[in-house]
Amino acid sequence: MSLINNRIDQTCDELEVGQIFRSGGRTVTETDVVNFCALTGNWIEIHSNTHYAVRTRFGRRLVQGSLTYAIVTGLIQFGLGIQANYGIDNMRFLAPVDIGDTIYAVCEVIGKKEKDDKYGVIKFLMKAVNQDGVTVQQAEWSLLMLRRREDLDALIAASLPDLKD
Image 1 (cartoon, rainbow, N blue to C red):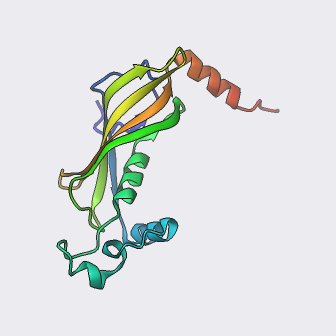
Image 2 (cartoon, helix red, strand yellow):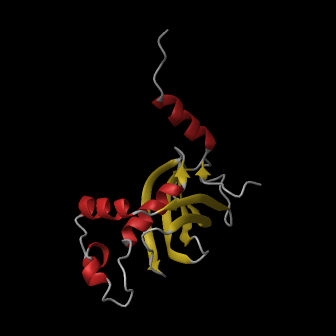
Image 3 (cartoon, one colour):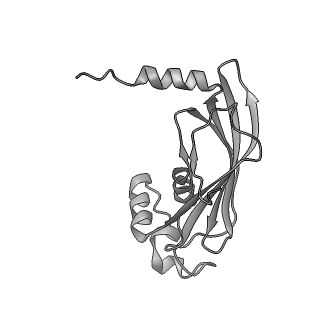
């Protein structure tokens, strides 16, 4: 069994409650934080102003929680069975993330339900874990997925262009 298993290519029916996916790490850089400030307009002082941030309870600038979540969702690679984001519940920011921290994703299947004959909803407990093994963030993330392999294979086949020789 591989310690890094960060690709979810299964359909809803193929996934099992209790299944765990883990990623390799991704170090959050100063550039990431500044680019995210610019992209989102989130120039909140704790993220962008060193003079202010050193006077807070944390004593330093911190990585945005939404950036941490964006990174974690990218560390787990989702195959084509995923059809839509269905919702994020119970997001918690459990510990600060520092510029220079390395984040890992741990994603556990915690629920699944049939929506109809073709689609189901998978609920994942998505955790961001730092280099020290501390869970810094977690949320329940629900995704709409195709239920059956044959439906996924048909969708993929229909989406590929015919090759011209």
